[in-house]
Length: 619
Image (cartoon, rainbow, N blue to C red; front, side):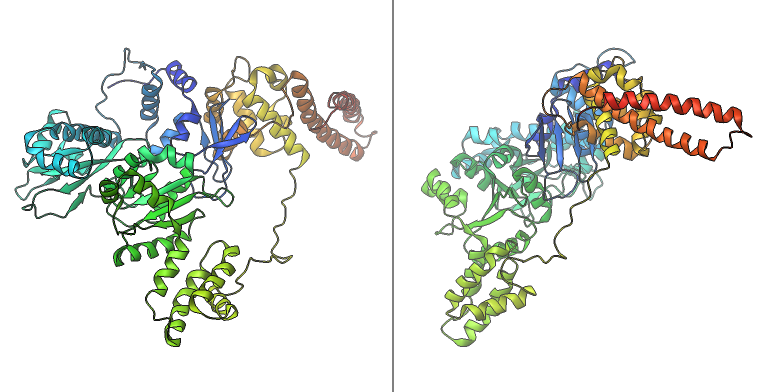
């Protein structure tokens, strides 16, 4: 087994890894000024972006949940990896050959993290299935793809494969590759037979690999090909530590960049629909895997869409036009209220899914299907009204009772009165009657909310001036240690008043101060690790990305002014303590102490005067 990775190699991985590139694979990032970018935090749900990434210092921090660190920490937390595993993954990405203290390049580690072993097993299985697709026994799989308009290049792009007929063909292959029975079973690739032996989970089926945002294979979807196969039409990997069907979106690794770029995601129903959309010029299509579209899927897409109160993307559902499709659309409308993106539905007039549409009418028809989308609420209302006879009073009242709650649920309150008027027109009723029904269903006002004085948010008080100065000093040390240098080191932790600032300042001392430190993720992480308090460690990440309170380029004078103000506050505190003590002393009975304090008081006043002169200017 390899030993500890050399520190200089870890530092090299940090230096050669662009944290913006790593994070942007999972989170849509937009410019936030000052060389920083922002996005929705991948570690907690939020509507307003508070996740800040500093490209200059290669670190990130979330102002909402406090998560922060460098690229290594991000990969550890996102992919649930150990430190060494995260370093190895980033080293491979950056082309860094790691050396271990035991000597030599890294050997194959026998005790890789469990999750990484399962990913490796899935990768090996995926490669095996791909090779099997060209075998004579896979003719039915190749014909299935060809009949749906997918050539060999398309099959290769999406990693399509074939699971052969043998009971344990894959099991034997993976054993030869060094995987254990427990690993194969844990990955969902094999299952125990009645005899107790291990057999393949997928047999005689067309296979699609299912990948996560990072592109790792986490499971498979398998389509039935033969009439004598008594299994379900589609068979997916069971729930594993990698594969959680409520979180999985097929095609997300292909679509993620276009979803982020276009601000649009198209939800389709199957693997072939995703392939058809992508090949037809709708590269933002993804599909759920054996489950309904739900809140966990929404969370995945929101981070890519930058879906906030002010940055609204589009979610476009494509469903069959039959009763089951309408039911699925209405269920999606209920979930739609949980996120802010504008939601639409696209239904083919011939009730064809995207794969059938591409095959029958060409690529342009698929693009037109998406272009003709209509708002989800309009479709939902139309679906409800279709169930009633609007020529009768009873039918109109029944339709109103069912439709009013849908209008009341519209997240954008400004749209509610518009849809209330539309509903009134469709029903042939007075607008006031419909508006009252909507208000009753929603528990109040139909139109845009009018906040009272009590409801208006109260602005938080500004930070205390001393807190601002202390934060600025620590930001200088973390972001520009070369410029801050000896001036910062000359002021100790005792000069800081805020307890958490004291901890951070002491951590900087504990790692040797700013002498020899260079800006970047390595330096920031070094200070983070030296913090004896979790809140202080989080503050290090926050300050590493927070812009300086400075217009223009940083120079030594700004450092001197900032540190003079910090030190002035400390000297002023000491002045007050000494004055209070002098006033309480009897100069006759405590002559020596009185004289000593008087001398210190004179010295402090001179020092404070000099600091005031140095601290000219404004933060």
